[in-house]
Image (cartoon, rainbow, N blue to C red; front, side, top):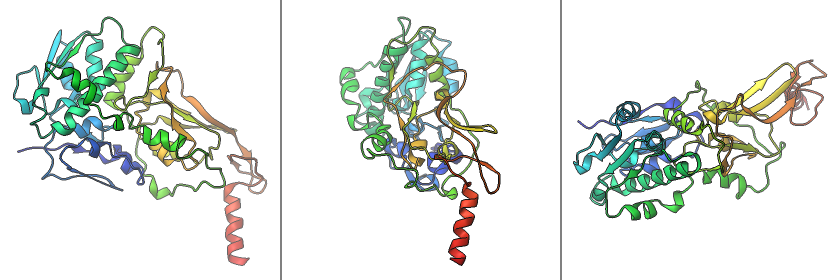
Length: 363
């Protein structure tokens, strides 16, 4: 009996923020087996063929494919000088049989290559006949492109080769990648840079309803930890690392106009966006080592001041989170509470709300 990926709702950005437009898993699925809704994702059992492409595309690892246990596969692979992956539909022999070569994500492939383990990917010649091939071949091309980006920026001469034994190898790397999907980040970058050329002011921004964000404990992902191992290189990087759809990491930046609503930190699934507070100060921090590039912080930001940078710098683990925005606390002249506000104010939002309620009732 064919199994299906396990869905972990608390990790899904569509569950964490009910208005999220993330569709990475559905875009990667060649069988239209995923239904997206405000509650997250529903898997249509009758349509799912468990190719694991959705699991590889999800930056938060909300989908977990039991037929491709990445950590177990890596533990076996690192004990060998070379490893041959073969896709199950091709029925070819390999050290590891995977449901689809496109489900081998860039972090996994780059990690093996960085340890000097030669990787062979067998079965691409069957993509045209494979039911997964319509999306699997494109995903593989995307991942190989990301690996080459990593090799160029953070690699060295000890990296081993990744070979695709197929007469169409060059064509796969060149055309298997759809330029329109080059940056899944572009939906969020474009929203901040192109479509919204003017950040919304504090007075225009509408607060996110509390029910729109579901709280759950932050978590880390195996893919992001593998990337951070590659990023922690002893030498200084010659150039910044370009953002890439298959590199599940990003650097968040901010423009003026933050309203200190804290929605980004509440929606962030990995704890990359952080609120730090003392008796007299408040700040919004960003920890690169935890960011998986899911983009929910950019989506939830009502002033539209958060955005992804086109390049990632300072990749090594920092001592503390980067401060994106900081405010000093003010004291309310009416109730004597400390509060934060993007602009100087005499009374706190609670007292201001009380005044508005009183005016609406009594005029």
